[in-house]
Length: 161
Length: 161
Image (tube, rainbow over all chains, first blue to last red; front, side, top):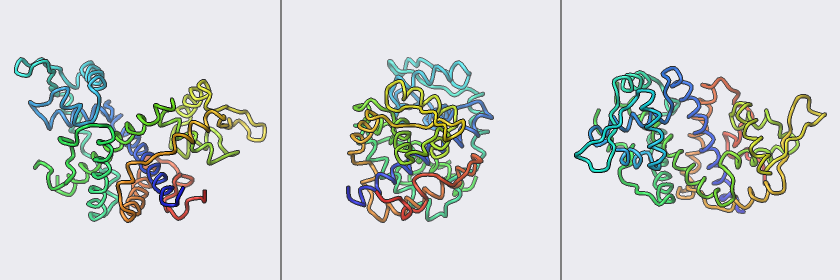
């Protein structure tokens, strides 16, 4: 085992463990609103996609299997965050509508400072491109499509507010 | 909402979602060995700590609550990956011993190339220090101790093989 191989494995651990801690921090914040990190991601995606927010598209964008999204949506429908709508325009597809309650909780939860704020703007830019590279590789390893992921690999392609 | 605030939130999403994808990739690899990403992290930590691998120390190092580690250890004991040992030398503490089976599966699972390999050495170094900064901030946000985390914030402090 060469030194650089070793460092790559340890860097990988640093990443995975840090992200675990970040998610715990976020879940603590979200507990106030009674939503999970995953429901927050689903609402975020559904609001962004608007009329195009189908079950399969949300699954693609969050790199989740359809059955996971489906279970997730059922839980979210029970707690009144979203509605599943059968849309005759889109064959065999369930469309996701965020309820007033879901939107309100989501919006409240967005008023926050993330741990990323500790970085300089240059570090933020470098981190973006480095993580985008890793994501591309990881999505490829899953045999999935790299298109249509959000956020985009290039931050200049972020949609306007 | 200023532009830079917005970019920080989106960078945060990129991180969290990439992490989710990385974990799925790793879980796919680990399925061959019948272990989860979390049991792999527990074995990794227990092997590194050796005689000092107590329940609470493993929990601290992985930033997991004691009850989560405890449930995790019970599952791992059932599948024969570890043994929980009551050590009279360490009061009120359970020590974790990795079994032969656990060590063997873990070692086999280490023979791999991670998604981090797609980065240049310079990108790897920069990523290390950037993520270490984020981790420090996140651990602080949880009100936890930044000492004793692994991997260390400075890669030159990695223990020798």
